[in-house]
Amino acid sequence: MRAVIQRVLEAKVEVEGSVIGRIGRGLLVYLGVGKDDAEKDAEFVADKLVNLRIFADEAGKMNRSVIKIGGGVLLVSNFTLHGDCRKGRRPSFDAAAEPTLAEALYEKVIALVAQSDVPVAKGSFGAYMQVSSINDGPVTFLLDSGRLF
Image (cartoon, rainbow, N blue to C red; front, top):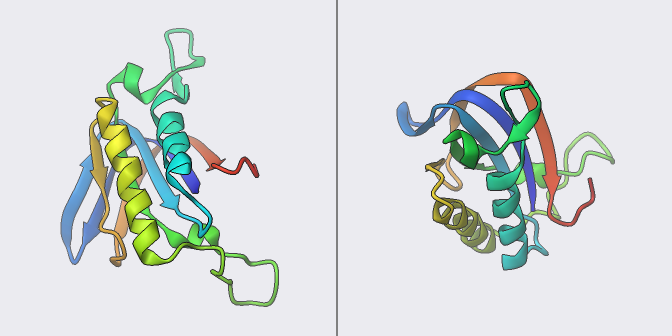
């Protein structure tokens, strides 16, 4: 499972002109599920999202998690995170999970984050979405449950 994690002041996702998910201060997370991913990967990602200390404390050091600041998480499915651009001019998506598995694990991450008492908003799995945000910093991290980076 791969994630792009962005610290934001606010973020929203729209489908067909309607806002379906919105957060204030917190994390905008693009989440891609790989074909070899399992429930343990969802658990790893959810734990990282709620506990990653990337918000400033009083001294200005990244020392607080989204839980500690009372922030929210906006999770947006994004299979293109498993796109392989190393060959040719068209990305290969062979490493991306099939939709049934991907949706189940995406929803599992959402449920696990919500169990941590973090407000969660989400996109619409498989839909064409417009995502907008105000990045804070900018602060952006890459996460891979296989610890490839």
